[in-house]
Image 1 (cartoon, rainbow, N blue to C red):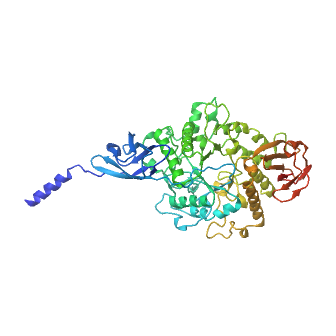
Image 2 (cartoon, one colour):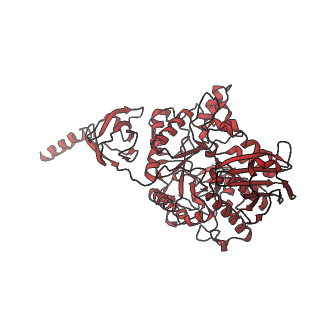
Length: 621
Protein backbone atom coordinates (compact mmCIF):
# COMPACT_ATOMS: atom_id res chain seq x y z
CA UNK A 1 0.00 0.00 0.00
CA UNK A 2 2.83 2.40 0.91
CA UNK A 3 4.59 1.65 -2.39
CA UNK A 4 1.43 2.54 -4.28
CA UNK A 5 1.21 5.87 -2.47
CA UNK A 6 4.85 6.70 -3.25
CA UNK A 7 4.38 5.74 -6.89
CA UNK A 8 1.25 7.86 -7.16
CA UNK A 9 3.03 10.83 -5.59
CA UNK A 10 5.90 10.52 -8.05
CA UNK A 11 3.53 10.43 -11.00
CA UNK A 12 1.69 13.45 -9.63
CA UNK A 13 4.91 15.45 -9.20
CA UNK A 14 6.07 14.62 -12.71
CA UNK A 15 2.87 16.05 -14.15
CA UNK A 16 3.35 19.44 -12.44
CA UNK A 17 4.66 22.34 -14.63
CA UNK A 18 8.39 22.94 -14.19
CA UNK A 19 9.07 26.30 -12.56
CA UNK A 20 12.59 27.59 -13.23
CA UNK A 21 14.23 30.75 -11.98
CA UNK A 22 14.49 33.26 -14.80
CA UNK A 23 17.99 33.21 -16.22
CA UNK A 24 19.60 36.47 -17.32
CA UNK A 25 22.48 35.47 -19.57
CA UNK A 26 23.78 38.99 -20.11
CA UNK A 27 23.02 42.67 -19.82
CA UNK A 28 24.78 45.21 -22.05
CA UNK A 29 26.32 47.67 -21.37
CA UNK A 30 27.92 45.51 -18.69
CA UNK A 31 27.89 48.45 -16.24
CA UNK A 32 27.36 52.21 -16.42
CA UNK A 33 28.19 55.42 -14.58
CA UNK A 34 26.47 58.13 -12.63
CA UNK A 35 27.02 61.70 -13.73
CA UNK A 36 27.05 61.15 -17.49
CA UNK A 37 25.92 64.24 -19.41
CA UNK A 38 23.25 62.24 -21.20
CA UNK A 39 21.03 60.63 -18.54
CA UNK A 40 19.45 58.15 -20.98
CA UNK A 41 20.54 54.52 -21.01
CA UNK A 42 19.16 51.55 -22.96
CA UNK A 43 20.02 48.11 -21.61
CA UNK A 44 19.97 45.01 -23.77
CA UNK A 45 18.78 42.11 -21.60
CA UNK A 46 19.20 38.55 -22.85
CA UNK A 47 17.80 35.35 -21.32
CA UNK A 48 15.40 32.49 -22.18
CA UNK A 49 11.88 33.89 -22.65
CA UNK A 50 12.82 37.05 -20.78
CA UNK A 51 10.11 38.96 -22.67
CA UNK A 52 7.46 37.02 -20.73
CA UNK A 53 8.45 38.65 -17.45
CA UNK A 54 7.46 41.86 -15.74
CA UNK A 55 10.43 44.11 -14.95
CA UNK A 56 10.90 46.58 -12.14
CA UNK A 57 13.75 48.46 -10.49
CA UNK A 58 13.79 50.43 -7.26
CA UNK A 59 16.85 52.65 -6.91
CA UNK A 60 16.98 56.36 -6.04
CA UNK A 61 17.56 58.47 -9.13
CA UNK A 62 16.98 55.63 -11.61
CA UNK A 63 13.70 55.45 -13.51
CA UNK A 64 12.58 52.62 -15.81
CA UNK A 65 10.92 54.59 -18.59
CA UNK A 66 9.96 51.84 -21.01
CA UNK A 67 10.20 48.10 -21.55
CA UNK A 68 10.70 47.28 -25.24
CA UNK A 69 9.91 43.85 -26.63
CA UNK A 70 11.25 42.69 -29.98
CA UNK A 71 10.69 39.79 -32.34
CA UNK A 72 12.81 37.35 -30.30
CA UNK A 73 11.27 36.67 -26.85
CA UNK A 74 14.75 36.09 -25.42
CA UNK A 75 15.43 39.85 -25.46
CA UNK A 76 14.20 42.96 -23.73
CA UNK A 77 15.47 46.49 -24.27
CA UNK A 78 15.02 48.63 -21.15
CA UNK A 79 14.95 52.43 -21.42
CA UNK A 80 16.27 54.09 -18.27
CA UNK A 81 16.87 57.60 -17.01
CA UNK A 82 19.81 57.92 -14.62
CA UNK A 83 19.26 61.27 -12.94
CA UNK A 84 22.07 63.55 -11.83
CA UNK A 85 21.08 62.74 -8.24
CA UNK A 86 21.73 58.99 -8.62
CA UNK A 87 24.59 57.68 -6.51
CA UNK A 88 27.09 54.96 -7.44
CA UNK A 89 26.05 51.52 -6.26
CA UNK A 90 24.33 48.25 -7.14
CA UNK A 91 20.75 48.35 -8.34
CA UNK A 92 18.62 45.23 -8.59
CA UNK A 93 16.32 44.56 -11.50
CA UNK A 94 13.44 42.27 -10.62
CA UNK A 95 12.10 39.97 -13.31
CA UNK A 96 8.78 38.40 -12.39
CA UNK A 97 7.42 35.52 -14.44
CA UNK A 98 6.59 32.01 -13.32
CA UNK A 99 9.16 32.73 -10.66
CA UNK A 100 10.78 35.94 -9.46
CA UNK A 101 14.50 36.61 -9.93
CA UNK A 102 16.81 39.60 -9.55
CA UNK A 103 19.81 40.81 -11.50
CA UNK A 104 22.39 43.12 -9.91
CA UNK A 105 23.66 45.96 -12.10
CA UNK A 106 26.41 48.37 -11.14
CA UNK A 107 26.46 52.13 -11.51
CA UNK A 108 30.06 53.27 -11.10
CA UNK A 109 31.41 56.66 -10.11
CA UNK A 110 33.10 58.47 -12.98
CA UNK A 111 36.84 58.81 -12.46
CA UNK A 112 38.83 61.98 -13.02
CA UNK A 113 41.39 60.16 -15.14
CA UNK A 114 41.89 61.62 -18.63
CA UNK A 115 39.54 60.40 -21.35
CA UNK A 116 38.48 61.71 -24.73
CA UNK A 117 41.41 64.16 -24.82
CA UNK A 118 41.63 64.00 -28.59
CA UNK A 119 44.57 64.17 -30.97
CA UNK A 120 45.41 67.17 -33.10
CA UNK A 121 47.93 68.42 -35.63
CA UNK A 122 50.35 68.69 -32.71
CA UNK A 123 50.47 64.90 -32.56
CA UNK A 124 52.37 62.18 -34.39
CA UNK A 125 50.39 58.90 -34.42
CA UNK A 126 51.96 55.43 -34.58
CA UNK A 127 49.78 52.62 -35.94
CA UNK A 128 50.38 49.21 -34.36
CA UNK A 129 49.04 45.79 -35.32
CA UNK A 130 49.06 44.20 -31.82
CA UNK A 131 49.38 40.55 -32.88
CA UNK A 132 52.50 41.34 -34.91
CA UNK A 133 54.36 43.84 -32.70
CA UNK A 134 55.59 42.28 -29.45
CA UNK A 135 54.71 39.29 -27.25
CA UNK A 136 55.05 39.88 -23.52
CA UNK A 137 52.94 36.94 -22.32
CA UNK A 138 53.15 33.64 -24.17
CA UNK A 139 50.51 32.09 -21.90
CA UNK A 140 47.76 33.98 -23.74
CA UNK A 141 48.89 33.16 -27.27
CA UNK A 142 46.10 30.63 -27.81
CA UNK A 143 43.15 29.08 -26.00
CA UNK A 144 41.72 25.66 -26.77
CA UNK A 145 38.15 26.81 -26.08
CA UNK A 146 38.18 29.59 -28.70
CA UNK A 147 36.87 29.19 -32.24
CA UNK A 148 40.39 29.59 -33.59
CA UNK A 149 42.74 27.82 -31.17
CA UNK A 150 45.85 28.17 -33.35
CA UNK A 151 48.96 30.32 -33.05
CA UNK A 152 52.00 29.77 -35.23
CA UNK A 153 54.61 32.40 -36.06
CA UNK A 154 55.84 30.29 -38.94
CA UNK A 155 52.47 30.63 -40.68
CA UNK A 156 51.94 34.17 -42.02
CA UNK A 157 48.14 33.75 -41.95
CA UNK A 158 47.71 32.67 -38.33
CA UNK A 159 48.02 34.50 -35.04
CA UNK A 160 51.57 35.13 -33.89
CA UNK A 161 51.00 35.98 -30.23
CA UNK A 162 51.68 39.68 -29.98
CA UNK A 163 49.73 41.31 -27.17
CA UNK A 164 48.91 44.60 -25.49
CA UNK A 165 51.47 44.14 -22.73
CA UNK A 166 54.11 43.82 -25.44
CA UNK A 167 53.15 47.28 -26.70
CA UNK A 168 53.11 48.66 -23.16
CA UNK A 169 56.65 47.39 -22.65
CA UNK A 170 57.90 49.56 -25.52
CA UNK A 171 56.43 52.94 -24.62
CA UNK A 172 59.96 54.34 -24.24
CA UNK A 173 60.70 53.33 -27.83
CA UNK A 174 57.76 55.38 -29.08
CA UNK A 175 58.82 58.37 -27.04
CA UNK A 176 62.37 58.18 -28.34
CA UNK A 177 61.04 58.20 -31.90
CA UNK A 178 58.96 61.32 -31.25
CA UNK A 179 55.57 59.60 -31.26
CA UNK A 180 52.82 61.29 -29.23
CA UNK A 181 49.83 58.99 -29.88
CA UNK A 182 49.31 55.26 -30.37
CA UNK A 183 46.67 53.77 -32.64
CA UNK A 184 46.15 50.04 -32.20
CA UNK A 185 44.30 48.00 -34.79
CA UNK A 186 41.11 46.72 -33.07
CA UNK A 187 41.63 45.00 -29.74
CA UNK A 188 37.98 43.95 -29.26
CA UNK A 189 37.37 40.20 -29.07
CA UNK A 190 37.52 38.39 -32.42
CA UNK A 191 36.46 34.86 -31.46
CA UNK A 192 36.22 34.03 -35.13
CA UNK A 193 36.78 30.68 -36.81
CA UNK A 194 39.53 30.49 -39.39
CA UNK A 195 38.44 31.36 -42.91
CA UNK A 196 39.57 29.78 -46.15
CA UNK A 197 40.85 32.48 -48.48
CA UNK A 198 42.71 31.59 -51.62
CA UNK A 199 43.20 28.04 -50.40
CA UNK A 200 44.83 29.11 -47.10
CA UNK A 201 43.29 29.03 -43.63
CA UNK A 202 43.52 32.46 -42.03
CA UNK A 203 43.03 33.82 -38.55
CA UNK A 204 41.25 37.08 -37.68
CA UNK A 205 44.46 38.45 -36.16
CA UNK A 206 43.72 41.87 -37.71
CA UNK A 207 40.82 42.41 -35.29
CA UNK A 208 38.01 43.62 -37.58
CA UNK A 209 35.45 40.88 -36.85
CA UNK A 210 34.05 41.74 -33.39
CA UNK A 211 32.36 38.91 -31.48
CA UNK A 212 31.80 40.65 -28.12
CA UNK A 213 31.80 44.44 -27.98
CA UNK A 214 32.47 44.47 -24.23
CA UNK A 215 35.56 42.26 -24.15
CA UNK A 216 39.09 42.96 -25.29
CA UNK A 217 40.40 39.76 -26.88
CA UNK A 218 42.00 37.61 -24.16
CA UNK A 219 44.74 36.60 -26.57
CA UNK A 220 45.77 40.26 -26.39
CA UNK A 221 45.46 40.31 -22.61
CA UNK A 222 41.79 41.18 -22.07
CA UNK A 223 40.21 44.30 -20.60
CA UNK A 224 42.71 44.55 -17.75
CA UNK A 225 45.73 44.66 -20.06
CA UNK A 226 44.14 47.33 -22.25
CA UNK A 227 43.20 49.44 -19.25
CA UNK A 228 46.76 49.23 -17.93
CA UNK A 229 48.13 50.11 -21.37
CA UNK A 230 46.02 53.28 -21.66
CA UNK A 231 46.98 54.36 -18.14
CA UNK A 232 50.69 53.69 -18.79
CA UNK A 233 50.53 55.56 -22.10
CA UNK A 234 48.88 58.55 -20.45
CA UNK A 235 51.55 58.54 -17.73
CA UNK A 236 54.11 59.09 -20.50
CA UNK A 237 51.99 61.75 -22.24
CA UNK A 238 51.07 59.41 -25.07
CA UNK A 239 47.48 59.47 -26.27
CA UNK A 240 45.51 56.45 -27.45
CA UNK A 241 43.38 56.07 -30.58
CA UNK A 242 40.68 53.38 -30.47
CA UNK A 243 40.02 51.52 -33.73
CA UNK A 244 36.30 50.71 -34.01
CA UNK A 245 33.89 49.06 -36.43
CA UNK A 246 30.21 49.96 -36.80
CA UNK A 247 29.54 48.60 -40.27
CA UNK A 248 29.80 44.89 -39.51
CA UNK A 249 30.56 42.27 -36.88
CA UNK A 250 32.22 38.87 -36.95
CA UNK A 251 30.06 35.97 -38.08
CA UNK A 252 30.67 34.40 -34.66
CA UNK A 253 29.31 37.37 -32.67
CA UNK A 254 27.35 36.14 -29.67
CA UNK A 255 24.23 38.10 -30.70
CA UNK A 256 24.08 36.44 -34.11
CA UNK A 257 23.68 33.01 -32.54
CA UNK A 258 20.20 34.12 -31.46
CA UNK A 259 19.55 37.59 -32.94
CA UNK A 260 16.92 39.93 -31.47
CA UNK A 261 15.18 40.27 -34.85
CA UNK A 262 15.59 39.34 -38.49
CA UNK A 263 16.44 42.95 -39.34
CA UNK A 264 19.40 43.10 -36.94
CA UNK A 265 21.45 42.52 -40.09
CA UNK A 266 20.97 43.60 -43.67
CA UNK A 267 19.29 40.58 -45.24
CA UNK A 268 19.22 39.66 -48.94
CA UNK A 269 17.37 36.89 -50.85
CA UNK A 270 20.83 35.52 -51.65
CA UNK A 271 24.27 36.60 -50.47
CA UNK A 272 25.09 40.10 -51.72
CA UNK A 273 28.51 41.66 -51.36
CA UNK A 274 29.06 45.41 -51.28
CA UNK A 275 30.33 46.77 -54.58
CA UNK A 276 33.10 48.64 -52.70
CA UNK A 277 32.11 51.65 -54.82
CA UNK A 278 31.79 54.93 -52.93
CA UNK A 279 30.23 56.93 -55.78
CA UNK A 280 26.60 55.80 -55.29
CA UNK A 281 26.61 57.23 -51.75
CA UNK A 282 27.17 60.80 -52.89
CA UNK A 283 26.24 60.72 -56.59
CA UNK A 284 23.22 63.05 -57.17
CA UNK A 285 22.22 60.81 -60.09
CA UNK A 286 22.72 57.52 -58.27
CA UNK A 287 20.27 54.64 -58.64
CA UNK A 288 18.86 53.61 -55.24
CA UNK A 289 19.69 50.00 -56.05
CA UNK A 290 23.38 50.88 -56.46
CA UNK A 291 23.39 52.84 -53.22
CA UNK A 292 21.75 49.94 -51.40
CA UNK A 293 24.40 47.50 -52.58
CA UNK A 294 27.21 49.81 -51.46
CA UNK A 295 25.75 50.44 -48.02
CA UNK A 296 23.86 47.23 -47.23
CA UNK A 297 25.93 44.65 -49.05
CA UNK A 298 28.20 42.60 -46.82
CA UNK A 299 31.89 43.49 -46.75
CA UNK A 300 32.83 39.81 -47.01
CA UNK A 301 30.77 36.66 -46.24
CA UNK A 302 32.23 36.25 -42.74
CA UNK A 303 31.58 39.89 -41.71
CA UNK A 304 27.76 40.32 -41.55
CA UNK A 305 26.47 43.82 -42.22
CA UNK A 306 24.68 45.58 -39.35
CA UNK A 307 21.39 47.37 -39.99
CA UNK A 308 21.95 50.73 -38.30
CA UNK A 309 18.45 51.86 -39.23
CA UNK A 310 17.19 49.44 -36.60
CA UNK A 311 17.01 51.72 -33.53
CA UNK A 312 18.18 48.98 -31.16
CA UNK A 313 21.24 48.26 -33.28
CA UNK A 314 22.02 51.98 -33.38
CA UNK A 315 21.65 52.39 -29.61
CA UNK A 316 23.74 49.28 -28.95
CA UNK A 317 26.63 50.63 -31.02
CA UNK A 318 26.44 54.18 -29.70
CA UNK A 319 26.32 53.14 -26.06
CA UNK A 320 29.25 50.81 -26.58
CA UNK A 321 31.20 53.77 -27.95
CA UNK A 322 30.45 55.81 -24.83
CA UNK A 323 31.23 52.85 -22.56
CA UNK A 324 34.58 52.27 -24.27
CA UNK A 325 35.77 55.86 -23.96
CA UNK A 326 34.57 56.17 -20.37
CA UNK A 327 35.94 52.83 -19.16
CA UNK A 328 39.29 52.64 -20.91
CA UNK A 329 39.92 56.39 -21.20
CA UNK A 330 40.90 56.41 -24.89
CA UNK A 331 41.44 59.78 -26.53
CA UNK A 332 40.46 59.48 -30.18
CA UNK A 333 38.20 57.36 -32.37
CA UNK A 334 39.22 55.85 -35.71
CA UNK A 335 36.26 54.35 -37.58
CA UNK A 336 36.77 51.47 -39.96
CA UNK A 337 34.91 51.35 -43.33
CA UNK A 338 33.29 54.70 -42.57
CA UNK A 339 31.70 55.26 -45.97
CA UNK A 340 29.79 51.93 -45.87
CA UNK A 341 27.80 52.98 -42.79
CA UNK A 342 24.40 54.64 -42.76
CA UNK A 343 25.56 58.27 -42.73
CA UNK A 344 22.65 59.58 -40.67
CA UNK A 345 23.56 57.02 -38.01
CA UNK A 346 27.19 58.09 -38.17
CA UNK A 347 26.23 61.72 -37.56
CA UNK A 348 24.16 60.71 -34.55
CA UNK A 349 26.97 58.58 -33.15
CA UNK A 350 29.60 61.26 -33.72
CA UNK A 351 27.41 63.88 -32.09
CA UNK A 352 26.77 61.73 -29.03
CA UNK A 353 30.50 61.17 -28.51
CA UNK A 354 31.31 64.85 -29.02
CA UNK A 355 28.63 65.98 -26.59
CA UNK A 356 30.01 63.71 -23.87
CA UNK A 357 33.69 64.28 -24.74
CA UNK A 358 34.03 67.66 -26.51
CA UNK A 359 37.78 67.23 -27.14
CA UNK A 360 37.67 63.75 -28.66
CA UNK A 361 38.87 63.49 -32.25
CA UNK A 362 36.99 61.26 -34.68
CA UNK A 363 38.40 60.23 -38.04
CA UNK A 364 37.15 57.50 -40.34
CA UNK A 365 38.37 55.38 -43.20
CA UNK A 366 36.79 56.35 -46.53
CA UNK A 367 39.06 55.06 -49.27
CA UNK A 368 38.24 57.43 -52.14
CA UNK A 369 40.25 58.87 -55.03
CA UNK A 370 39.36 62.57 -55.18
CA UNK A 371 39.03 65.56 -52.89
CA UNK A 372 35.30 66.21 -53.41
CA UNK A 373 34.36 62.64 -52.53
CA UNK A 374 36.63 62.69 -49.50
CA UNK A 375 35.04 65.94 -48.33
CA UNK A 376 31.58 64.33 -48.42
CA UNK A 377 32.46 62.11 -45.47
CA UNK A 378 33.87 64.87 -43.25
CA UNK A 379 32.75 68.33 -42.14
CA UNK A 380 32.96 70.40 -45.30
CA UNK A 381 32.02 73.66 -47.00
CA UNK A 382 30.27 72.11 -49.98
CA UNK A 383 26.52 72.32 -50.50
CA UNK A 384 25.91 68.58 -50.35
CA UNK A 385 22.31 67.52 -49.56
CA UNK A 386 23.77 65.52 -46.66
CA UNK A 387 26.11 67.29 -44.25
CA UNK A 388 28.58 65.08 -42.40
CA UNK A 389 29.63 66.10 -38.89
CA UNK A 390 32.72 63.90 -38.75
CA UNK A 391 35.61 66.14 -37.60
CA UNK A 392 38.38 64.37 -39.51
CA UNK A 393 39.14 61.58 -41.94
CA UNK A 394 42.07 59.55 -43.18
CA UNK A 395 43.52 61.49 -46.10
CA UNK A 396 43.69 58.85 -48.83
CA UNK A 397 43.81 61.50 -51.55
CA UNK A 398 46.96 63.13 -50.18
CA UNK A 399 48.48 59.66 -49.67
CA UNK A 400 48.05 58.98 -53.38
CA UNK A 401 49.51 62.40 -54.21
CA UNK A 402 52.56 61.77 -52.01
CA UNK A 403 53.37 58.58 -53.90
CA UNK A 404 52.68 60.05 -57.33
CA UNK A 405 54.88 63.04 -56.61
CA UNK A 406 57.73 60.79 -55.49
CA UNK A 407 57.47 58.25 -58.28
CA UNK A 408 56.30 60.20 -61.32
CA UNK A 409 58.50 62.27 -63.60
CA UNK A 410 57.88 66.00 -63.82
CA UNK A 411 55.14 67.08 -66.20
CA UNK A 412 52.55 69.83 -66.61
CA UNK A 413 50.31 68.36 -63.93
CA UNK A 414 52.28 65.30 -62.77
CA UNK A 415 55.24 64.72 -60.50
CA UNK A 416 55.75 67.50 -57.96
CA UNK A 417 52.41 69.04 -58.99
CA UNK A 418 50.36 66.26 -57.40
CA UNK A 419 50.83 67.25 -53.75
CA UNK A 420 50.48 70.92 -54.65
CA UNK A 421 47.22 70.35 -56.53
CA UNK A 422 45.73 68.24 -53.75
CA UNK A 423 46.46 70.78 -51.04
CA UNK A 424 45.22 73.56 -53.32
CA UNK A 425 41.72 72.11 -52.87
CA UNK A 426 41.74 72.20 -49.06
CA UNK A 427 39.14 74.98 -49.09
CA UNK A 428 36.43 72.31 -49.31
CA UNK A 429 37.16 71.03 -45.80
CA UNK A 430 35.88 72.62 -42.63
CA UNK A 431 39.33 72.16 -41.06
CA UNK A 432 42.03 70.37 -43.08
CA UNK A 433 44.32 70.32 -40.04
CA UNK A 434 42.11 67.55 -38.65
CA UNK A 435 42.76 65.18 -41.55
CA UNK A 436 45.06 62.26 -40.69
CA UNK A 437 47.89 61.83 -43.19
CA UNK A 438 49.99 58.71 -43.86
CA UNK A 439 52.41 56.98 -46.21
CA UNK A 440 51.24 53.40 -45.64
CA UNK A 441 49.09 51.32 -43.32
CA UNK A 442 47.96 47.74 -42.69
CA UNK A 443 45.90 47.67 -45.92
CA UNK A 444 48.52 49.07 -48.31
CA UNK A 445 51.87 48.08 -49.73
CA UNK A 446 54.76 49.09 -47.51
CA UNK A 447 56.01 52.62 -48.18
CA UNK A 448 59.69 51.70 -48.52
CA UNK A 449 58.78 49.19 -51.22
CA UNK A 450 56.52 51.67 -52.99
CA UNK A 451 59.46 54.07 -53.41
CA UNK A 452 61.71 51.33 -54.79
CA UNK A 453 63.69 50.98 -51.54
CA UNK A 454 65.30 54.33 -52.35
CA UNK A 455 66.31 55.97 -49.07
CA UNK A 456 66.36 59.47 -50.58
CA UNK A 457 62.79 59.08 -51.85
CA UNK A 458 61.84 57.60 -48.48
CA UNK A 459 63.16 60.71 -46.74
CA UNK A 460 61.29 63.06 -49.10
CA UNK A 461 57.94 61.50 -48.26
CA UNK A 462 58.66 61.46 -44.53
CA UNK A 463 59.62 65.12 -44.73
CA UNK A 464 56.32 66.06 -46.33
CA UNK A 465 54.39 63.90 -43.88
CA UNK A 466 55.98 65.65 -40.91
CA UNK A 467 55.93 69.20 -42.24
CA UNK A 468 52.70 69.70 -44.19
CA UNK A 469 49.23 70.20 -42.73
CA UNK A 470 47.27 67.50 -40.92
CA UNK A 471 47.88 64.88 -38.25
CA UNK A 472 50.68 62.57 -39.43
CA UNK A 473 50.57 58.84 -38.74
CA UNK A 474 53.29 56.23 -39.17
CA UNK A 475 52.73 52.50 -39.73
CA UNK A 476 54.74 50.30 -37.40
CA UNK A 477 58.14 49.41 -38.83
CA UNK A 478 58.24 52.17 -41.43
CA UNK A 479 60.90 53.83 -39.30
CA UNK A 480 63.17 50.77 -39.68
CA UNK A 481 62.48 50.27 -43.40
CA UNK A 482 60.14 47.29 -43.13
CA UNK A 483 59.13 46.45 -46.68
CA UNK A 484 56.98 44.24 -48.96
CA UNK A 485 53.93 44.35 -51.20
CA UNK A 486 50.47 42.95 -50.47
CA UNK A 487 50.90 40.45 -53.28
CA UNK A 488 50.49 37.54 -52.65
CA UNK A 489 48.68 38.50 -49.41
CA UNK A 490 48.14 41.17 -46.77
CA UNK A 491 50.35 39.11 -44.44
CA UNK A 492 53.38 40.34 -46.41
CA UNK A 493 52.87 43.87 -45.07
CA UNK A 494 51.96 42.70 -41.56
CA UNK A 495 55.13 40.94 -40.53
CA UNK A 496 56.38 40.73 -36.95
CA UNK A 497 58.42 43.63 -35.63
CA UNK A 498 61.94 42.17 -35.22
CA UNK A 499 62.81 42.01 -31.53
CA UNK A 500 59.26 41.83 -30.27
CA UNK A 501 59.28 38.06 -29.84
CA UNK A 502 61.42 35.79 -27.65
CA UNK A 503 63.11 33.82 -30.41
CA UNK A 504 63.92 36.79 -32.64
CA UNK A 505 67.54 36.84 -33.76
CA UNK A 506 67.46 40.61 -34.32
CA UNK A 507 66.17 43.38 -32.07
CA UNK A 508 65.23 46.47 -34.05
CA UNK A 509 64.04 48.27 -30.92
CA UNK A 510 67.70 48.87 -30.17
CA UNK A 511 70.16 50.88 -32.26
CA UNK A 512 72.69 48.08 -31.86
CA UNK A 513 70.24 45.67 -33.49
CA UNK A 514 69.59 47.85 -36.51
CA UNK A 515 71.71 48.06 -39.63
CA UNK A 516 73.45 51.31 -40.56
CA UNK A 517 70.74 52.03 -43.14
CA UNK A 518 67.95 51.26 -40.67
CA UNK A 519 69.52 53.54 -38.07
CA UNK A 520 69.81 56.28 -40.67
CA UNK A 521 66.08 55.97 -41.38
CA UNK A 522 65.16 55.74 -37.69
CA UNK A 523 67.28 58.75 -36.76
CA UNK A 524 65.87 60.75 -39.65
CA UNK A 525 62.30 60.18 -38.45
CA UNK A 526 63.32 60.78 -34.84
CA UNK A 527 65.05 64.09 -35.49
CA UNK A 528 62.32 65.53 -37.68
CA UNK A 529 59.52 64.28 -35.40
CA UNK A 530 61.09 65.73 -32.28
CA UNK A 531 61.74 69.03 -34.04
CA UNK A 532 58.12 69.07 -35.17
CA UNK A 533 56.91 68.38 -31.64
CA UNK A 534 58.82 71.41 -30.35
CA UNK A 535 57.98 73.78 -33.22
CA UNK A 536 54.37 75.06 -33.21
CA UNK A 537 54.84 76.73 -36.60
CA UNK A 538 55.44 73.32 -38.14
CA UNK A 539 52.43 71.51 -36.70
CA UNK A 540 49.92 74.28 -36.07
CA UNK A 541 51.10 77.25 -38.09
CA UNK A 542 49.82 78.53 -41.40
CA UNK A 543 50.73 76.90 -44.70
CA UNK A 544 51.70 78.77 -47.87
CA UNK A 545 52.70 76.83 -50.96
CA UNK A 546 54.11 78.05 -54.25
CA UNK A 547 53.28 76.78 -57.69
CA UNK A 548 55.91 74.16 -58.62
CA UNK A 549 58.43 75.54 -61.09
CA UNK A 550 61.67 74.25 -62.55
CA UNK A 551 61.11 70.81 -60.99
CA UNK A 552 60.89 72.16 -57.45
CA UNK A 553 58.05 72.31 -54.91
CA UNK A 554 58.32 74.89 -52.13
CA UNK A 555 56.06 75.62 -49.18
CA UNK A 556 56.28 77.41 -45.85
CA UNK A 557 54.89 76.73 -42.38
CA UNK A 558 54.89 79.83 -40.24
CA UNK A 559 53.55 81.67 -37.22
CA UNK A 560 54.57 84.79 -35.31
CA UNK A 561 57.58 83.04 -33.81
CA UNK A 562 59.10 81.02 -36.65
CA UNK A 563 59.07 80.46 -40.39
CA UNK A 564 60.02 77.08 -41.83
CA UNK A 565 60.79 76.65 -45.53
CA UNK A 566 60.44 73.21 -47.13
CA UNK A 567 62.01 72.99 -50.59
CA UNK A 568 61.87 69.76 -52.59
CA UNK A 569 63.91 68.64 -55.57
CA UNK A 570 62.56 65.27 -56.76
CA UNK A 571 64.89 65.05 -59.75
CA UNK A 572 68.15 63.13 -60.22
CA UNK A 573 70.33 66.28 -60.31
CA UNK A 574 71.14 69.04 -57.85
CA UNK A 575 69.14 72.24 -58.39
CA UNK A 576 70.09 75.83 -57.59
CA UNK A 577 66.89 77.48 -56.44
CA UNK A 578 66.55 81.23 -56.96
CA UNK A 579 64.40 82.61 -54.13
CA UNK A 580 63.26 86.02 -55.45
CA UNK A 581 59.69 84.83 -56.00
CA UNK A 582 59.36 83.80 -52.34
CA UNK A 583 59.81 87.36 -51.06
CA UNK A 584 56.32 87.33 -49.56
CA UNK A 585 57.51 84.79 -47.02
CA UNK A 586 61.27 85.28 -46.73
CA UNK A 587 61.36 89.08 -46.51
CA UNK A 588 63.32 90.08 -43.41
CA UNK A 589 65.22 86.79 -43.22
CA UNK A 590 68.86 86.64 -44.34
CA UNK A 591 69.99 83.11 -43.51
CA UNK A 592 68.71 79.71 -42.45
CA UNK A 593 69.47 76.61 -40.42
CA UNK A 594 69.12 73.22 -42.05
CA UNK A 595 67.05 71.42 -39.44
CA UNK A 596 68.24 67.95 -40.44
CA UNK A 597 71.96 68.61 -40.90
CA UNK A 598 72.41 71.59 -38.51
CA UNK A 599 74.24 73.35 -41.35
CA UNK A 600 73.85 77.14 -41.51
CA UNK A 601 73.08 78.75 -44.86
CA UNK A 602 74.68 82.23 -44.77
CA UNK A 603 72.52 83.52 -47.63
CA UNK A 604 68.99 82.88 -48.91
CA UNK A 605 69.52 84.37 -52.37
CA UNK A 606 70.18 80.97 -53.92
CA UNK A 607 69.63 77.62 -52.25
CA UNK A 608 71.23 74.44 -53.51
CA UNK A 609 68.93 71.43 -53.22
CA UNK A 610 70.57 68.03 -53.70
CA UNK A 611 68.91 65.45 -55.93
CA UNK A 612 65.88 63.66 -54.47
CA UNK A 613 65.90 65.84 -51.36
CA UNK A 614 63.43 67.90 -49.36
CA UNK A 615 65.21 70.58 -47.34
CA UNK A 616 63.72 71.77 -44.05
CA UNK A 617 65.07 75.25 -43.34
CA UNK A 618 64.38 77.34 -40.26
CA UNK A 619 64.70 80.92 -41.48
CA UNK A 620 66.82 83.33 -39.41
CA UNK A 621 67.25 87.08 -39.36
